[in-house]
Length: 114
Length: 114
Length: 114
Image (tube, rainbow over the protein chains, first blue to last red):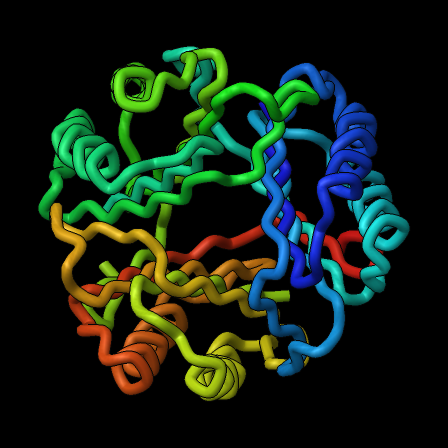
């Protein structure tokens, strides 16, 4: 029951999206008990993003939403990997990427809550 | 002061949106003290959504954000109803719908916080 | 490490966006320790937003996401200012603006978490 939502201000081709999808599907396993088998992903490209007062550099805002909790060290590893993926695939500099975590207590699937 | 944000990967016509809006306006009353009178809704259709590594089936990610808290049993009922609505209106299978809850401590309206 | 995400149902010109950006860049300093130097902003215009069962009036949903916490009185001031900015720049009535706050415990930048 994780969901990773990625907003970027650059163009994201279908091919690159597929590649990022595959890599995030592996990366999510860094969180104990999580796998691509429960992972939802959303992507938005060509977003209007400003960072430090400027909008002229590639940038990303990534939200990782998970049911339950995990140790902080796990999130550290996931941030490192997500940042690496966006750099590799889209050329977004690490210092223009925010990765935000939300631990969720109530999460529904298939008509009822976990 | 609830807000329900619905992202779907299918096309959402104005007519269907209006119908979902009306049904969510009733459903929100499942949460004690909430009503359509304070409900904000946002809809995004034709989103890029992946679930379980695939993007070829209708899917939805719904975020229910409410000021304050409610018992878990209430969220269970709301998940059941939201899932039903999206199935009825858009043919999205229950097992391709996530409904995530966020209980919010600080919420502003009309220039000040509740 | 704050991010302010603004969704409006009206058209947002580049010029107005730039003006709102500058004003939010100043407003964020109402939160102790925050400044435009760490601020990310996202804007989405012409969103499909319903409020109180209607979609025929200008409306906004603003999410302020910050790393760490701040006193409630600070958020009150920020809500007042954000509401004022959206009214001035886009003619959105204060009673059609929600400003929601999220205090975030895990936030990554530049490949690792704060």
